[in-house]
Image 1: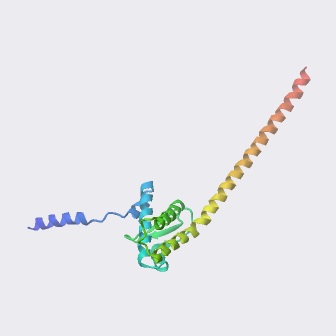
Image 2: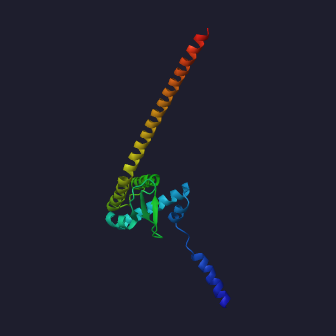
Image 3: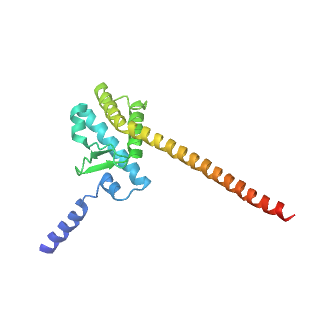
Length: 178
């Protein structure tokens, strides 16, 4: 009887083990599938929180940190594990697009006006963090291109000068021999 009880309890214990959440496993390995799942889960968390709470409360519950760095623009709380899940710049931009598409989708007319406003406020909050980073990246790329172009021109000029000097050095030597 005791073995039957232990055997049954052991089977139930294995079945009730919770698997790690998508966001938790997404932090471990950064694959496109894990990133997509992390974005989907974050989107669901935001839409769900906005259904019951205004932005002020929902954002305090979900946004853990807003560092504003390319590596970690912000951290959102995983709704299952309560652990902070970092979002890099590309993921933050994709999350913004996902949320905007979600509220613009024709099949989602069941969202209330306050819920849509809350989601839009999340998008605006994320945008205020990502826009300066995108602008800085664009400026950095322009500076890099400018520096590369300048270096290329300088190298080309040096090559031309060296070629000219070599030709001048060869010309008097060959004219003196004849």
